[in-house]
Image 1: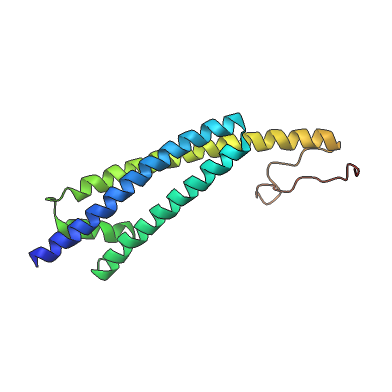
Image 2: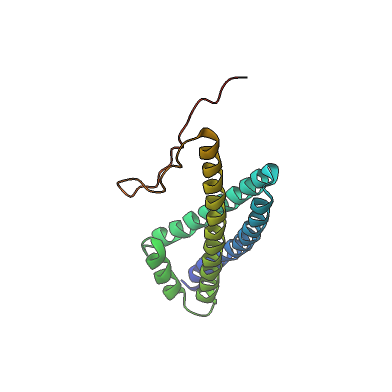
Length: 161
């Protein structure tokens, strides 16, 4: 039984290590994304976006692998199941500390992503206003009657070339 616990701890340790590396890479990508968003360089935005997507997919695969381990060992799913698994493995492997460090990295990545989203939203609003001026229409409301964010731009044929 002790060997099985060591094997599980080793497996979870590998997952947490790979996750830490990916979260660090994601943080760097989000910082780079902010810079290319400011510069409005379409090719760079596409490159960073594609790399970020691959990183997020890899993180999702690791999350699924962690979840599968929890289910296989009958600890349940989600964060609660993983916490139960960590409890069963005990403090010797230092997995709980690594898990909490990864959670902090993930929170930081979410903050960076939110910041980048606000920048994209501000640029989109600016472009929408400029298009409204060009079209001679009133800018669309930010929110509709049902408090849903308005997404449709007013369109008008500006001529043909």
